[in-house]
Image (cartoon, rainbow, N blue to C red):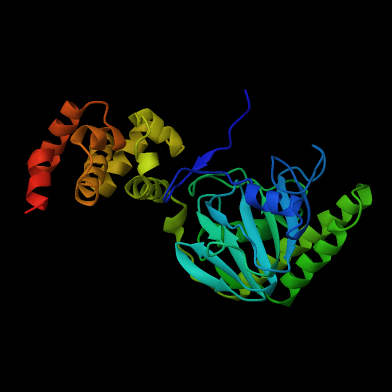
Length: 337
């Protein structure tokens, strides 16, 4: 059976690890030029298992005209640096940003983001996606062994990236030059010399990134790397995503999704919401149902029950009355007055 990519925090639908399929299709249709190396289904010439392990995608696109596609809200399986060399591009990560030449977007594996509004505009975009072995904020980062920064520098870089989730920065000349040099190497044929050059340039890129972030003296937020933060993001995603909400959750599966033990997860959920995990889940389902009753009065209560993840209309009515103090039908009638 083909292994499915991991699922991440959602917004308006299930978000899985992105494979940039629209970009691949646009490249195949010659709507833009794409140079890159990749593995795990990302766009680009496939890397061998021994070449730069942990590197998921290293590429550049050159879109000379407006495109008919965009990259909808998604997450990646690693830390992503994306540098806009020329043109303009709409980037969204909780807030909407209009990227200008010289801007760099940094996204962590748990940060949903999109490109295009909804389509891509003329632009030249470079990026690298590097798997650091994490999917949630509280997990420990594991950098590839070929990234040979001084251990203390790498530790500090990790702290700077983990404890600040600001997604958009000015790249600066050194980072821009690294991306441009990488693009030149990517245009060549794949061989051991190319991989050696890319190894050096990627190390230079992350060293430049470390120096840039360190010199900004930015405020660090240790609370961003706690299991508390992981559960907070999960609960938020349940309130935002109907499809995620409708999964057949158990307390164990919710804890596993957050990479936490059941007891720890339950305690954090109670702290954040003053409800047990199942109480919070049902409460969010009822909130979604109440909204649906208001917005889609043509639906029957049975249809709403199933759309909100309940297996029977009777159980739905019982839970609805518990949280709302009235039956779904009476609630509907009160909204129509």
